[in-house]
Image (cartoon, rainbow, N blue to C red; front, side, top):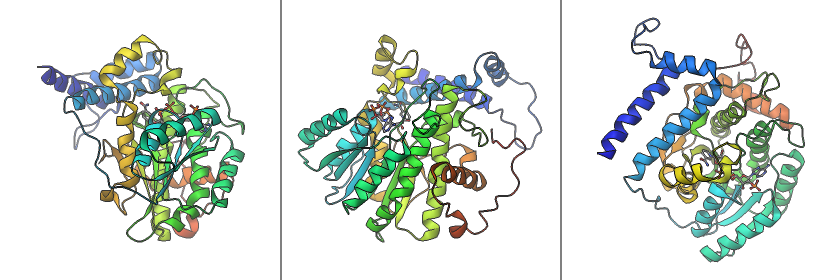
Length: 391
Ligand SMILES: NC(=O)c1ccc[n+]([C@@H]2O[C@H](COP(=O)([O-])OP(=O)(O)OC[C@H]3O[C@@H](n4cnc5c(N)ncnc54)[C@H](OP(=O)(O)O)[C@@H]3O)[C@@H](O)[C@H]2O)c1
């Protein structure tokens, strides 16, 4: 009975979500009234914070789907041992990143946790070494909110002449109050997007040197269902004209999907033995929600038990993307529950991908090689009317 109600509830919620996107019948002009779910939703949104509601709706749908998935008692993916392989996991000190580092270490990988806090970092290393009996787990400081720190991390890493087979761009901040990184970037944009952008670009040579035909190196970047609620404003990505913590988080997660797809195009064009995919962990019970009003205390504890994945379950898709033989040579995919899933339609727009990549290069001070690798890409054509892309 519960499952039947849940199916009906999910369908209704999905229709509400669809209403936000204002769908039209095939071959018709604008939709006539019909059941005005979308209209009601849109009106409520205008009255409150449109972005906030959309972000919550995406999260809510995801949580409801997970409740349904929980009935099926899913099992972690079975993956082969990975001795001699090296992985860097950003934000591997807590939550999904810690669980990812633990699972990769359990597969025999040499795991380097790139994180903010030295004490938490080495504590995480101690826990993983003890649990997995793998001594090859380390911590190296890397503050993704500081370009200098990212560059120091890469210099230290490459100085060791250590191979790099997997980079998991996992770290993130969510819905933080409006504040700036040490480089003066809005924090979601600076940490989630620009920090990972620079780190990945600077580590590409190491990844390429470690990839081989039939055994590509891999870049796995974490996004979220909230990317579906986002708009990307390339003229004002840091929200200087009006800040929404929900919008800023969702936008950074949308940017990471576009970034991964463009990266994959560049890697394929250059013939590098490296692939780039996106992992969406689902809704996971971690401290990421610390800045959300219900994110601490009894409401979350109660919800967490029922609808959230555990951090370990949240790591399954990242680990699958990092090492699964099924994904050998495959890139440009959005993975959710260890399966390819479509991302928001606008993420497949090569024009938008190129513009975002160019902006990332400009803001992090790295050369844009798109023109050399994808001829014609340097002239993306006229800008959209407002210079921003929404949907
Ligand atoms: N939890 C979810 O429901 C959910 C859903 C969709 C997507 N995700 C994504 O999953 C990823 C992991 O999230 P989580 O839930 O595991 O969150 P979490 O428990 O809060 O962990 C986030 C990690 O990122 C690190 N971090 C934050 N700022 C950093 C910086 N400037 N430099 C380096 N590391 C930094 C944190 O380190 P400190 O603790 O030292 O700050 C922590 O290790 C994020 O990208 C998030 O967007 C999560």
